[in-house]
Amino acid sequence: MGVRITKRTNIAVRLLMYCAANGGRLVTKAEIAECCNVSENHLAQVINQLSQLGYLRTQRGRNGGMALARTPATIRIGDVFRDVEGKPPITECFADADNSCPFVASCRLRLALMDAVSAFYASLDDITLDALVCENTDLLRILQPVACAR
Image 1 (cartoon, rainbow, N blue to C red):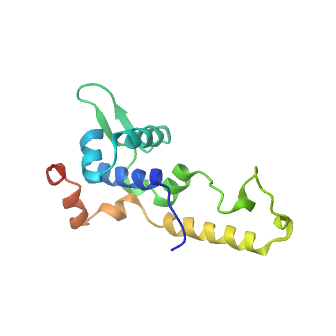
Image 2 (tube, rainbow, N blue to C red):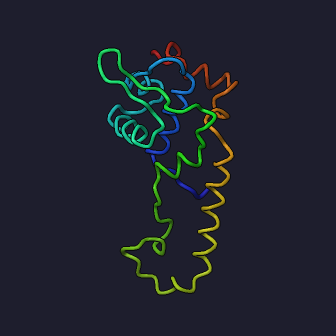
């Protein structure tokens, strides 16, 4: 497969799945980092972004942590990818700066790539966080705090 997802988006989806699997309680950055095999530094950046985007609610303090700000059934994975990835240029011709391609105005490949990216995100729009986690016993077993302790 030619599409590459950034590390940030990969971490974001793992984090959201962990929160969905552990609904009903606040989860901590340390337990997510351990279970999802992510550095706490990378995780902190993603937590901040997801809370600003309205996917997470966070609580500071000794008994603090985070939880989903919305129900898993209302979180579409396509939206998560769009929101976290932003709009990275696929090729040089999609970049506003540093675009030196002389074919931009008449390039059919550019149009085909735009359609392909739209189809990619549209296919992810059909998937909710709930669909990834609900009744996925193998995943739920991995995402339980006890199973994550080493």
